Amino acid sequence: MTESGTSRKNILFLMTDQHRADTLGAYGNPLAHTPELDELAATGTRFDRWYTPTAICTPARASLLTGQAPFRHKLLANHERNVGYLEDLAEDQFTFSRALRENGYNCGLIGKWHVGTRRTAADYGFDGPELPGWHNPVEHPDYLAHLAEHGLPPYRISDRIRGTLPNGGPGNLLAARLHQPVEATFEHYLATRAIEKLEQYAADSRERDQPFFLALHFFGPHLPYILPNEYFDLVDPADVELPRSIAETFHGKPPVQRNYSAHWTFDTMPIETTRKLIAVYWGYVALIDRQIGRVMEAMRRLGLTDDTAVFFTCDHGEFTGSHRLHDKGPAMYEDIYRTPGLLRVPGAPGGVVRDEFVSLLDCTATVLELAGIDPKPAVDSRSLLPLVHGEEADWAEDIVCEFHGHHFPYPQRMLREDRYKLVVNPDSVNELYDLWTDPDELQNVHDHPEQAQVRSRMTRRLYELLRERGDNFHHWMTSMYDVGEVGHDPTLSGLDESTYRPAGHPDSP
Image (cartoon, helix red, strand yellow):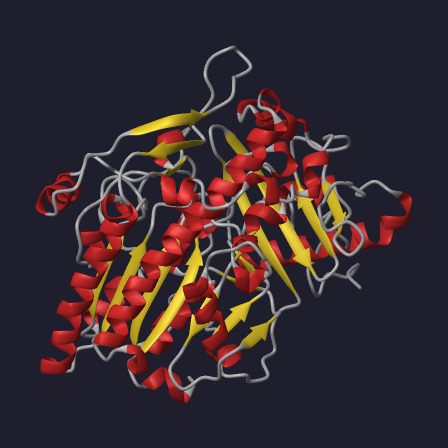
């Protein structure tokens, strides 16, 4: 454990939902209106290869809570589109929040929970209003009370943006204009409640020397992007550069991607609408950044800045027109798997940029180490503190991600390394992308003869990693792909040695 992990730091955990890395100035967007998050990057560490373990809300959030990969904690889908998977974690599941509570921490969560249906955030030790659902619950009594207390108008929208479904029905709502002032937005309400909780925790810190963990989880910028005029029109669509992957043809790709594009009605809307959607999405990020600024100012006012570690990340990314898609789904592109990740720790240098492959999963061990708690129960997590402090670390040169379905079961596994990405799709064609020559992942080169060596090497590496992790997806790969020498009985029967020769066998090497 590093020295910084022994002093029981306060922790502020800022989280968004469905957030692209390229919406922040710190990640290179010249049109971004994100001064607060850019300042956090400038005074802390920016991770350039920060990945979600799975690009779907509930499983990713459960991985953060437990420090376990989705295949291990087994909460694999959002309950709103669940097709038979579990809907809650096991009763005895380790979670970092319970560990914090047991070690004397105040522990709060303001905003989106979305980790199961039967048990709430309070059941895992978090203070804060219960705010169920996947998007801003604008009819929640606490929010309505907030509006009434401040004389603010109720939620009302116009200028809806949506396409047409393949069956002719109206598509999902993608964006709308909100007829409320900024002070009435759900985002402003969440920041207000977080500031109130900070004030309570600051008093406990002064009077009882009690540390705190406070999570502020915004429901946005998840679609639909519903914003007041100031942010709905903040970015001129004419200034928006369309993603190159808007030229996606789906040639040589799994057919499910074309079907998903139709489900999200991309081709039923003019390209000018896509520009507007991207502009409004960036406006949504700017609105959230402004609310984060209010919380950071409260931290300074309360004298907490020098004693509080601050995280910023999200559960997964968003397509926003990339690959002619919206939302997220069964396509393991960088748009939804690579996300922003910022971390500022008191005493650590600022302006640090790291390019190791790290994960949302690694937040769990980092939080535990900051609290002086053994991170071992977070078995798929690794503390980021050595990287934040600029230390040399023996870090993996690749990362594994997984997906289990949304709307329908659809298992996938991904191996991402410096240059190449391999995606295994059991029902369809596999994918291989050369990210040096094709950073937009438009050309699937999996079956190109010149990539045979890369394909074989990465397939074997993925197979080995899945076996090491205990992810039974590897069983499918055993008989279907070139996985190299098999040192175990793939039949699981123990009755046949034709494919397996244990050590000591007379015919073994």
